[in-house]
View 1 (cartoon, rainbow, N blue to C red):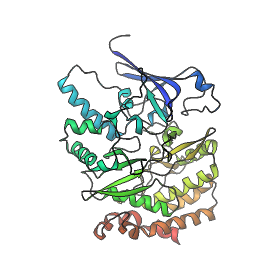
View 2 (cartoon, rainbow, N blue to C red):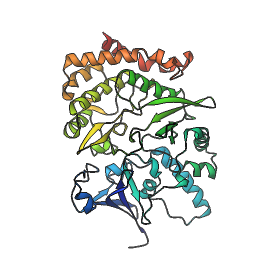
View 3 (cartoon, one colour):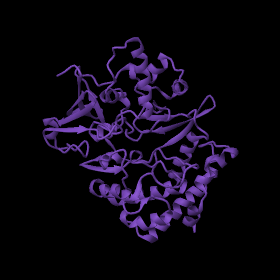
View 4 (cartoon, rainbow, N blue to C red):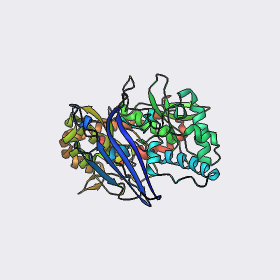
Length: 423
């Protein structure tokens, strides 16, 4: 193997017990990066064994994966779901740049380095990575997930990174604390008062409105519409609102639940247009209760349209493993009103209809989700009634927007399709 080739390996394990499932090998050869995964024979022999990822069939031998573009991952899709998001990569890159200033010969980061840098305790889903020493990668006190009482320190460090004046201590403190469930906005995993994992989402210096309160408002309205969102609340930090959102990939006693994003479910590339009807077809095959999951998915599409949540890409949808080879639609997350955007979904309704731009389009497509027109109109009316009270919810102590701030969101919640749904 030439000096330009770098090889990195990890054992892929599952759950709190770290049950071995397979071996991951990563290779960087010049500009090329690719991986190979093989299930352990012991995993294949287990009665409860299941495919960790749609691109990893339950069979012996190696499965190779090379990213089709720079935006895509060189890892199997389920593993790619656990990589750090854009914010996490930003923190990792800043820390690496600092180290390289004092050590110019430091090797360039590989995609495996990013994957391995996520805190083992809070890695999304049930997957864990064990190194050659037998320890789980990025475990121990250096990657400690902070308790909620440290939220002010976490916010201070993330703010410093956004402003570009972070210290080495800030970067060391934030290492591994980002998450896959998100984007470029500043955030951190935290441990809530009851010991359960949560995500702390902070205001950004670029915000023109209270995005943090807007997300909690959307999730509160989803709860009223019985659409099963992630639990969310506002926690003030020195007068600054922070959204604390319960992680849904852990049970009450801390057990890890295997997770797949919608993008992974469809084996989708980041740059291609895919459709909700494809998600529906996948749920028909894998869901433990396909009828309920299909109806819930369609009702969430109506909700997204009525509140102008247009950042509905496939990686903002997920499924959780329910056992016996079956899955369930995960609680909704990353739901935000976008009053400054055109009301057009990022994910298409179907290949024939394209993006969602009207309530009528959703009514016409409801049959693909097992919903008749009359029931679709009733569902839409119920959801519209929940969202029509957005101002009262926004002003409540649970959200905390002010009267002055209501106008920042008004166009997202008040438009002709809301009136049509209520009619």
